[in-house]
Image (tube, rainbow, N blue to C red; front, side, top):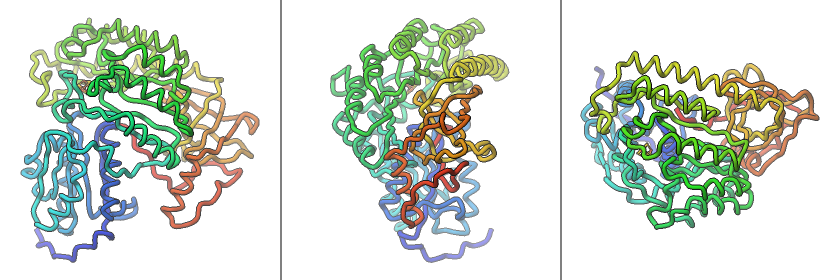
Amino acid sequence: MTTPQPQPAPAADDRTYEVRTFGCQMNVHDSERLSGLLEAAGLTKSGPETSTADVVVFNTCAVRENADNKLYGNLGILAPIKEKRPDMQIAVGGCLAQKDRETILAKAPWVDVVFGTHNVGSLPTLLERARHNNEAQLEILESLDVFPSTLPTKRDNVYAGWVSISVGCNNTCTFCIVPALRGKERDRRPGDILAEVQALVDDGAIEVTLLGQNVNSYGVEFGDRFAFGKLLRACGEIDGLERVRFTSPHPAAFTDDVIDAMAETPNAMPQLHMPLQSGSDKVLKDMRRSYRSKKFLGILDKVRERIPHAAITTDIIVGFPGETEEDFQATLDVVEASRFSSAFTFQYSKRPGTPAAELADQLPKAVVQERYERLVALQDRISAEENRKQVGRQVHVMVTAGSGRKSEETGRLSGRAEDQRLVHFSVPEGGQTPRPGDVVTVPVTAAAPFHLLADPAGVESYALRRTRAGDAWDRSQAESCGVPAQPAAAGGRGVSLGMPSIGVRS
Ligand code: SF4
């Protein structure tokens, strides 16, 4: 090993940062706050062209399999870089940090800061203290100090934003580590939430997603069980807010007033993501999920009765301990009946610290794999069938930044329909190219299980609506390049270059 050569620490303003996010949307949103805090402290985001940033923050997840391996693998890669650049700082936060605490410093002593899910706001102070004292800092709080939404946020995009309405969860699903790591549900006051939504809209956003582990129990803390439906309706009153979504509801707490609010609020989007987890009532009981498959299907019927075009998506766990072939068949039956437009499917894996990890009857990997493949094949078929029904329909697509390799090859742009389906569309000859945040209306011309294609035959079947969000996108690009905003080029085709991609669920 070479002895590290001390180098002068760069001034706070010169330092760059990078936040690497693992896990769920809650983490993606927390990472936006981490970025906001670091920028407020004077750091700038490192670009893809630069070498490893001066401050690297891992926002970890304890829910997914191999989360620890993934983190320690990444930390291992950074160890030699840190050895060469001792002023570089590495911080680890999120659920795994909340759970593993000092283990992280024991296994990776080159880490500078470990912080938990309840003290995201302390990161800049902890980094500064670690630098000043030349000593690793560990700070984990057991409960929430400041509601995270009051912290500065650096959003990944200007046209859409996430707003936390609650954190934590009062449920006790036996496979889930969230209650242990995120604590009891804490609800944010409606006035604060609406003020944040309004601030996002004032900044140019036209879409907002309300975020909570269990949005249907929102209000439990201040004694209003209809609070969530009221909140949706209040979002409907916000001028300039075009699209309101939420995640995630819990079937046990899903009440009709929420369906009414969804149906009667014009900017509430025709989309619902509602976790099924299992179609077997016995497995649901073992999971300590208090609804049964009949109730789940009943909610879907009511939603479709009021919002016929609603696209419904779900989460399903395959191979929960004790799941029999009969139980699994019940899941397949509910999936068949539910006609989900898509599903996030997971193979059950033990999470240390959860009650389910202690259950006897853990299933062999081969059994879980085989069932998983059957479930995925079924859902892929249903997704393809449901998407095919969209062919010929006109869809309003909000254009998103970033494009996959395929889009670069085909020249198509991408966006989300009102029901959240992914749409790849082409701009016809003579049509104006939209900016991220603009809305185009296009006919669906083909469908695949995971996306729709829309290739308008000509300008007469293509409509572009330039939005405030597109203007905000222009401004943000101009600010980041240091050049004045330009109107989007007319008549162009293809994908704009240099657009950062939005955060996606991994
Ligand atoms: S509802 Fe269940 S799965 Fe969801 S966060 Fe709460 S305990 Fe976890």
